[in-house]
Length: 363
Ligand SMILES: C[S@@+](CC[C@H](N)C(=O)[O-])C[C@H]1O[C@@H](n2cnc3c(N)ncnc32)[C@H](O)[C@@H]1O
Image 1 (tube, protein in one colour):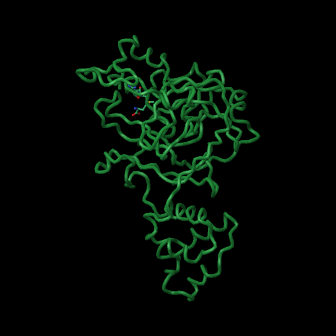
Image 2: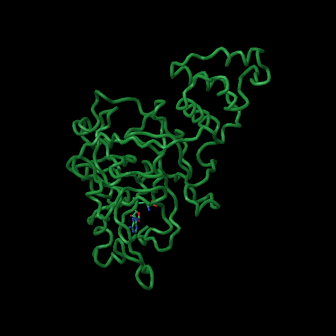
Image 3: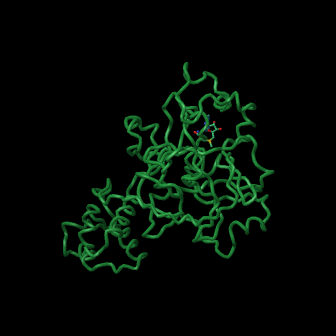
C-alpha cells in the first residue's frame, strides 16, 4: 500500500489519553473474587482484609460464596471494599472486570462511534477506552481496551499488534528491526482506543460499502501517534502482489508489511483520492521505547506537511486518510488521470460519482 516516510524515528511519545468512565456495563455483572485478587496482586497492592472478610461471614450479603468460586455482586461492590484505590486504578480495575465478564468477540454488541449506524449492529465495529503513548502497553497507566475482543473484526483475518516475520527475511535484517536483546513476550491482542473502523455508508465515498478507519479521540493534534501498521513482514521482492493490504516497510523500503490476513485496525485505512479530502495521516517509522522494535507508526500529519490550509489535526469520527502513493494506484488502475474524478476540497462533480470505479471493481 502506501510508502513509508524514510526513517523519521519518533518515539511516538504523544500522550493523548482519553478519559474512560468508571461506570460501565459490567458494573452490574458478577465479579469473581479471584479476578480482583489477581489484579491486586499483579499490581503489588495488598489485598485488603475487608475484601476477604466479605467471604468469611463478615458480610454475607455482598459476597456470593460457593464451593468452587466466590464472587461479588457487582464491580461497584468491589470498589466499595477498596477505598484507597486511586481513580486511575479504579478505572483499570473496572476494565479488567469488563474483560473478564464481557461476552467474546463476535457475540459482543456495542454502540458504534458513528451515530449514523447505531441501529445497524452488523455494520458496527465497537472500540473503546484507555490510552497509550506509542506502545501497546499492558501496565496500569496505559491499560487499553479488552485484549482479544475486537467487535466486528473479519473472521478471516487474524487480529494482532505484533509483526509476524516471514521466514524469508534474513535474520540479520529482522534483528535490526526487532533487536533480540529487547525482545519481550508477545502481548495479548488489543484493539486501539484511538481509532475505530466501520463500514462506509456514504454513496459518494469511493470506497462505499467497504470499511474505513476513523478517529475515536475527541481531537488528535498534528503529530499524534495513533497506532502501528501491522502485518506479515516479507522482503519487498517477496510481497504478495495480489494483496490490497501491502504497505512498504523498512528504513529503505526493503520490506513489505501485508495486513491481508493478519494485522490490526490500520488495515482499514483508505486512500484520500476521490474522497474530496486531503490525507490527514501518514506513516512514519518509530522506535518502540519498550521493545526497541522499529515499527510503522500511523501519525496525524504535521501541520507543515499537511496540504490542507489551517490543518490542526483530526477530530472524533473523522475518517483517517493516507496517501497510498501513486504506484499503488498505477499498478491497479493504470492511468491515474482517468482514475481521479474528485479533487481534495472540491465538491462532488455534477452527475455524481462515476458509476464504474475501476478500483472497487477489482474486489
Ligand atoms: C488497505 S485496504 C483499505 C480498507 C478497505 N476499504 C477495506 O474495507 O478493507 C485498500 C483497498 O481499499 C479500497 N480503497 C481505499 N481507498 C480508496 C479510494 N480512495 N478509492 C477507492 N477505493 C479505495 C481499495 O479497494 C483498496 O485496494
